[in-house]
Length: 127
Image 1 (cartoon, rainbow, N blue to C red):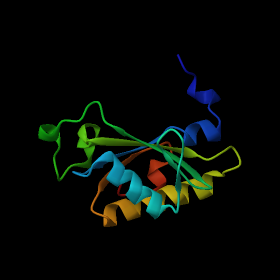
Image 2: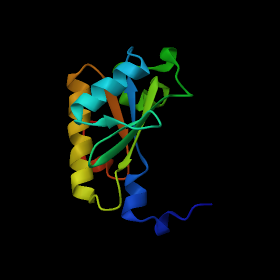
Image 3: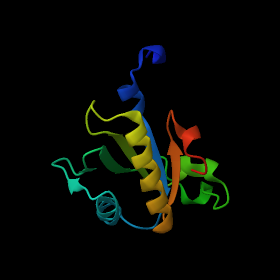
């Protein structure tokens, strides 16, 4: 069992997940995110910039019938899962959280429906 009391700030930031509800495919999402963060593609198919490492995967629990468009708590059934982490241990929490906030706002304004799951989610209300 993992002892969460021994998690460093870097470890906590590396557990950041955003589920998104969209009809777009993974490549379209990746391209949109790369543009939003002024990022580059990495060798493993993710996106990164000087603050964020991002991986976009299909959600194993995706179930369109269980998604309620008025309830973000149905995020576990959204079609895509975006895992975010700091580029390296030199990235501070404040700049990481601000970058995630900006990405969430851009996803929302771009027609995506994001739902944040993170240790710091109370610092970014509404997602």
